Amino acid sequence: RGAYHVFVKDVDDLDDLERVANPETNPLWGVLYNSAEDDLTGLYNFRYFQKMALEVLETVRTRNPDETVTLLSIDADHFKTINDTHGHLAGDEVLRKIGNILKSHMRLSEFVCHKSGDEFLVLRIGGNWKGAQRFASRLQQAVAESEVVYRKGEPPIRFTISYGGAQLIGKKITTAEESLRTLLHLADKGVHGLIERRDKERGAQVHARRAE
Image 1 (cartoon, rainbow, N blue to C red):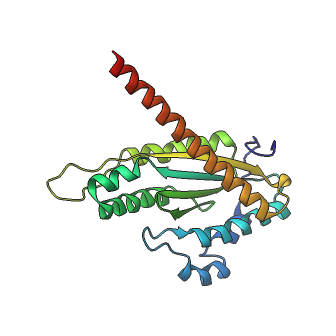
Image 2: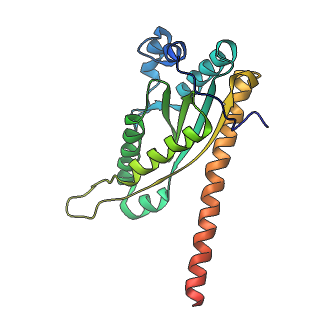
């Protein structure tokens, strides 16, 4: 689908889009917020995120056809190992820490949710794909520089994240529902493809070292 991962000029005036998708300025989202929060991380939950994303996509389609919408799918790396090594409560603290870091990097035109398990989603309004990659790299760096001290006297838990993403320009949106499904599929496929390739490379490196 050639409509995805396109390059467009940044649009400076995002006031309308920000008002639509900001619970502080849109009464509809404010009413829904009580049922919108993820219990573990305090971020938006996936159900609310989907409603917000559909509203954003429809607004871009009808009012800002030259604008872009980017979806990033973010996974905590080797999260099962963290749970197995340190326990599920420690894993929960890691997810909370990642959620807090992601949230601290969001602007008014960016929204983050805890999808499930070790998965997070970020929705961005505006900007080109290279800008989205730089933004995701900043998130990766911030997470990699953090740590969780779960038990006093034990080494801190360090962790990283991986991401995949997809971008769509407003004039190529057919329906908000179809476009959201496609963005979710492409972003999820991107992050899992990256993880699989990286794990294969690491496996090959380990095999080579053992052969030596």
